[in-house]
Length: 477
Image (cartoon, rainbow, N blue to C red; front, side, top):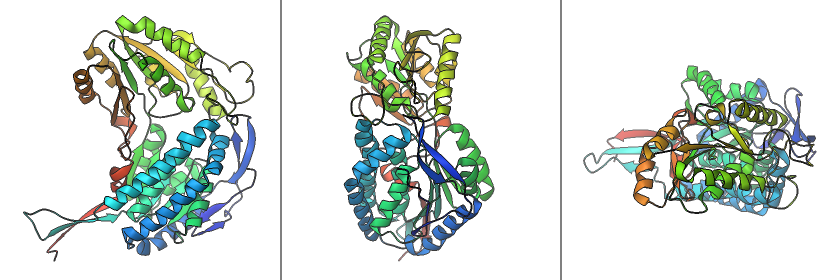
């Protein structure tokens, strides 16, 4: 893991124009696990030029040609699963059990589902029987800048890279500098699969450097970004002068509405979901809204689940949560826990500081607050750690009002055995996704949100369409 890798531009590994070393930190140990170079304007320009030069030929390939290359990549990705899991676990702290399954598996699932979407997608369609000589063409948007976060590295890389490739776009990927090892490994796989030079390019860098260069670059036709709402706003402003397409997948503050008639596992399921990936998921159900008649029992159950949630090194096997990704993230979470206590929320599990025996590493105690109201910072701000806020409600109308009283609108959750009520509430919740009674998203379902959770949809056919322009041609023969 200590081997230094450079940038992948125009089908080869190249050195940066300027030496600007950056240490990648293993969050379990707080020690460097790799050194990368952070790119600058010249590196970004070279990558964009390579993508631009490759676009004309790649955009004209058939979907059968693109499918054949994606199938090769899929086979390589599966064959090198152990390497990918180790890279993800080392760089961002996912426990090995999670890295081998959900973290690696997210990439595999998206490659497979996007190949299915490509196979079934019609890039040329008639407008309709009423206008037989009007034809609709779906064409690649062009050169795409893809900016991905650290929390689910292959989930986001696959959603963007594979969709862009399938659509016929060329691209420059800037992975998070905090978790770049998995993306460098993915670049090796793309190279091994034999994609033409310039179709895929990778430049490491931070948001201020490479990220801003991509979002404002006149030869980049589209930016697809996943990350914080703050960064999404900055990217949108920087992209405005070139009127490029900007697709954003941003933060969330999901409400998990637990009614008195919820199944007996609903609270346990909700707490575990909140703590999954050490709470570092934008769609985590971090606000648990509980009907008052079962509120006290729900609080006791949540506290018990938190107390029994093990925390340990990412490198070891077992069912536990690992560290959060960085010292900066650790301090932010500690500050939010302190703020929850200061605002008067009742701490029923966890709290400030590190778990016993884990003094080194960015480990956080699984934390549960009860008696939270929706005006508290812990109920309004995205904490991105294993911290759950529990809020009581008295009526269906109040639950919906609390759930929707947020800047975000990514995922909400409903727990009830009354199907009519569940469907009625799902229609009222202002979010891009609603999950009822633990039902997960199906393969190829659109992932994305309302309001300040962003404006894009990723996955399956919707993810493919994000990277396509729509053209109408009249007089088609």
